[in-house]
Image 1 (spheres, one colour):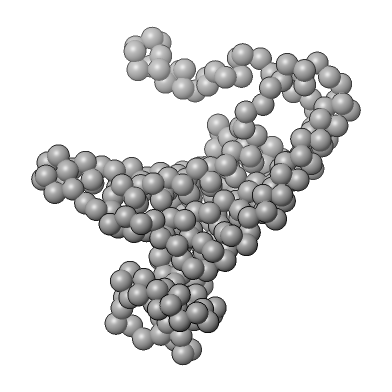
Image 2 (cartoon, rainbow, N blue to C red; image 1 turned 120 degrees about the horizontal axis):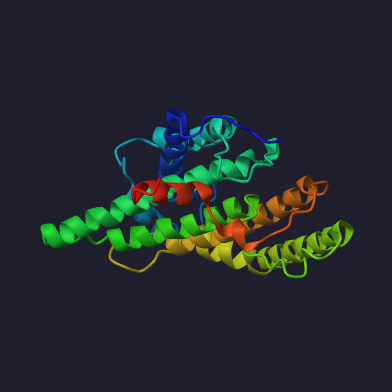
Length: 284
């Protein structure tokens, strides 16, 4: 169905940002969850992750709950993640420039599109802050570059899920458009199957290394700031690739009965942007 609703509302900014903040706190304090729920039997690994938590804990004076290392803020952030996810999915609106054949099942990917926008905003803020400190105050930080890389990795991954839902991935239509609809459906089924097989093979071949070696051992980046980029981005790659594969299957099902589309060079022209440019240069 095509949805025509007001977009860019206050809550469409606030809820994704709250989700990002809760996710950021949760990710930064994952060592507390590891030590609480899945502690290492190896004493050296246990001491290593404990040292990481002691050095990175934002609220070190709060006692752990339920006999563990995770405190009340850690559990609150973890609890609020699905709350903001559900609120965000319920409140997301499709903008005029987005894919208009909207389905309720697409709300998840659409919400992560808004989350990606908030991540880009935060990444840009970090970069501007670093530029100001470096060139205006001559006092550069030790963490801005790595934090930008870290956020940028999640931007890349989340935008992949959103791009799949929007059907904005690169596609070549030279042969596709001249085929009858029944053959187009066969093409769609084949490429979706190939992608699902690729995702399954990627997860099967690397999940032990990623989730045991990288995540459970909480591997750090090895710089002065030393963020856990390997321990977080690599698991996110496997999780997101599974979500993208699921979204590809959803797209196949939702688009099965749609009328065939003909693609031309005019599809690349954004009429609204073109009109805005004309107004800007005074061409009425």
